Length: 110
Ligand code: 5GP
Ligand code: ZN
Image 1 (cartoon, rainbow, N blue to C red):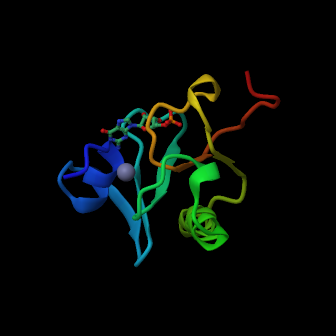
Image 2 (tube, helix red, strand yellow; image 1 turned 135 degrees about the vertical axis):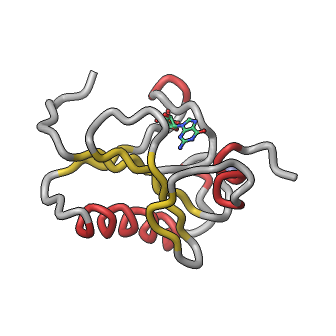
């Protein structure tokens, strides 16, 4: 059995608040939201980081999954974030896109 937290969430072995699911993509509410909307969108099939994606299609499907969640919530202004590697802020090594929205956001990031 996978020891990966997000694999367990995809499999339903760890509970989450599911937002979206299709054949390849799963989205759920972040447990510690940084914005009124903070959804994590992940591939069902595990890879650690974007650089480990076996093919480009899955990355596109995850990104478009995030855009679909935003659209369904009526969000026009939002941010998509991929933290790649520990020093960039990645803490869970199952590729994911953060969808953040519902408040103004500053740029550049810290
Ligand atoms: P990262 O730091 O890897 O880019 O993002 C990991 C995200 O996963 C964080 O925003 C964190 O709040 C979220 N997270 C960590 N553990 C859990 C959990 O058990 N359930 C959910 N829904 N989110 C989690
Ligand atoms: Zn995983």
